[in-house]
Structure formats: C-alpha cells, structure tokens
Image 1 (cartoon, rainbow, N blue to C red):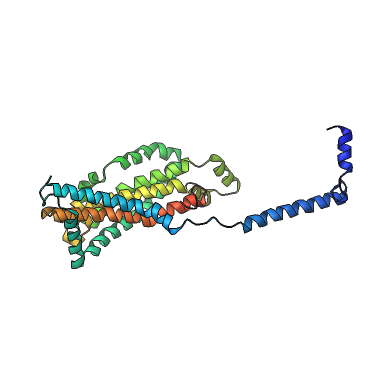
Image 2: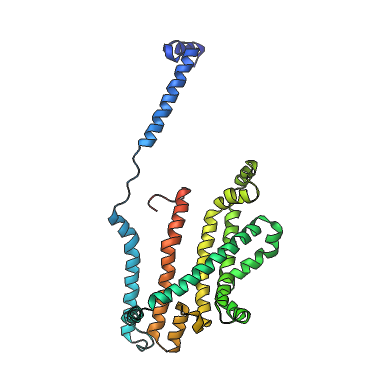
Length: 315
C-alpha cells in the first residue's frame, strides 16, 4: 500500500478509532468488550450431550455379556461332546451348583472376604513400601544403579518361588502369606513410579524448583502429580501381582488357624477330587479380580486421564 493510500485510510477512520488518546481508549474498550463477549459465549455454550442409555449399554454392557455367553456355550458343547468324563470336566450348571451350595451353607462370602481382606491389607503395605522405593530409584542415580536392576528382576520372578522360603522364615502363618504378597507387588509398584517419573518433561521439574518446590514439597506438589499416570499403571499392575501372589501362597500355606480363602478352598476341593468345586473356586478368583478392576482401578484411571485431557467425555 502506498503512503497516499495509508494516509487516506487513516483519514477515513471514525472519530472513535483514530490514533489520538481518545481513539486509543475507545479501541481498548472495544477490545475488552469483544473479550467479554467471547468469555460469555464460552460460559453459555451448552455442555456436550451425554450419549443415550441405550448407546452406553450397547457399547459397554453387550460386548462382555456376549463374550460370557460365547464362553459358556463353547464350554457346554465341549462338556456334552464327552471329550472328558463328567467328573473331570463338569458343565457350567455343575459348577454353578457348587457355588450355590456354598451360598446355601453361608460360607461363600466368608471365603471371598478372607482372601479380599488379605489382598487389600498386603497391597496397602506394598504401596507404603513401593512408593518411596520407586522415588529413590527414580531420583537418586546411585540407588538406581545399585538396586534398579534387582527390583526389575524381582518383578519377573514367579511369586510362588518365594513360598518355600517364606514358610521356613515365618511358618504356616499369615506372615508367610503377606511376605509373598509384598515380594510380588512391591517391585511392580516401584517400577511403575520410576516409569512415571522418567516420563516427566524436565522443564516441569525445573519450573517447580524455580518456584521453591524442593524436597518433600516438590515430591508432593510436582513429582507425584506429574508421574500419576505411570504411578497408577504401576498400582494396577501391583494389585494384579498381589492377587496372584496371594492365591499362590494360599494354595500351599494351608492351616486351620488361618481360615479358608479362595486359594485354600481350591486346594481343599482338589484333595477331595471335586472338579466342580475346583472350577467354582477358579471362577470366584477370576470374578473378584475383574470386580476390583472395574469398580476401582478403571474409574480412577479414566478420571486421571480425563482430567489431563487424554480421554474424551464419553470414555
């Protein structure tokens, strides 16, 4: 644009849009009004519609139900085909009869609670031990070099391998069961928080130190919140290892004074050659594991991911 065109354009501006002091004030007021109008539009924008209940059922409920029906159908077909005798491969109705019998006797919830209470207690202790251990490995180079590979190796070691040693150390007591749970779960939790800390952008940590967030304050307000997705994945895996370790311990550590958990129940049915009871115990162990994940870990994981913009509202 030539100088003449520019002068003409400036000359055609209205009195409220000129380059003088009053024109600058009017321009600022106009920009502020535009900003306020934009904020009002954001506030009054309707929230996204929630999907209808039918769509939720179709997406979330029907697929697992269809999978269950398919498994039961295949199981029943194999049972009726006579591949194995009935006492070796009972059908779904026989297994359901064993569960129903435990319910009528009033022992079903007792078996479940014995194992669940042990699993939760051991998992809580594992969190208390695994979290500081993971932070030390993640933030102290000497500690990572010294015990980081050992912790990773312990995670790959089958939990049942610890049972004979734990029995020698603690005898046929709950101490043996909790020791096996901790040895199975602590490495997973520690490795989870190490992975979460390693994924934090360095600029976040530098910004926290600049603001004075050092020491325990930095861990609480910067390190743990930033590492939360990885830490949560470690907790989820830690619970899986806790539950598996508990079942392995209960299969072997069997004493009347300890009560009867699901693993001990399965071993009792095995000694009685009751295959329906064995499969019923396996089914209960699976259902408890799935229920803990669906009722606790999955909602918590969705909430964390949604709060960070990593998951849509319908997720």
